Length: 329
Ligand code: SAM
Image (cartoon, rainbow, N blue to C red; front, side, top):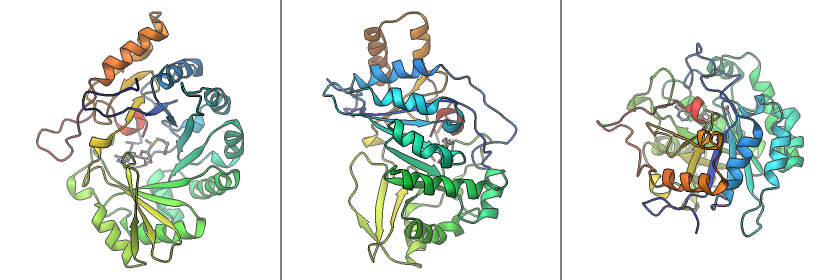
């Protein structure tokens, strides 16, 4: 019986943060003063958690962080993970979310180890703006090289995610449209959510879906194409068929009703929602010697507590107990 929550949602998608450290200090995400706040676990522990969860119906595992490529041994971990088979022997879909800074040298080894696809976060296509956002000099060239190496390695589909913030980078919408067409990648714009370390979010900072579509149409019209129900992004093609754009709009068009995700933090806690105000210590269960069946029982109980929806922008909104960089986006 696949894993379901009490609202009938099937839980098929696992995200594991393999480190709380990050080499970028994106201004909308981190204060720039805090380093890692949480530890990480030996890969063998994440592997055991993933195997138990795959046995319960997880079909996709996304590695994230912090910055996952900072973790030594990530290629071997992907190789081990890719040997995990679901109960019907299907190979696991293994994805990675990265800032791309270290991807150029790792794309091919990761592909060879069994990584299926990659999403690169990139919030500007202008190198100076990119440096101001990430607070790292010359990062843009590394990331572009990483994207091109991922494409050469056949890590496909290749997605580039851009978080838009009003007054900050919404002028990058059209340049990103051009980038999608020139580089042959899917560019996905993400609405900014209240998950940053220094609580800058306000409704007015969000650039909503309709505005993104309208702005892009000034460059070239977009045609909406079908997306899977559980897919977070609405998908669009340019009218001439060249280039794909996605928009992830958790604020203006929430998709909680189709959420299929749970997350494991770098220190082994389960989070049932980005906006959870508590987490559930799976690693503590392992440390006290729980069997795989006991872990599965614990996970089933946790999943039953999955929140129905987020409350962004509502008067009763309570900030999440961890910010994005410490959860794993
Ligand atoms: N370091 C990796 C990376 O850059 O992709 C993985 C971790 S990062 C926290 C994951 C994603 O979360 C990035 O695409 C980042 O832009 C996004 N993110 C961070 N803070 C966010 C926020 N407040 N709202 C929406 N997305 C956010």
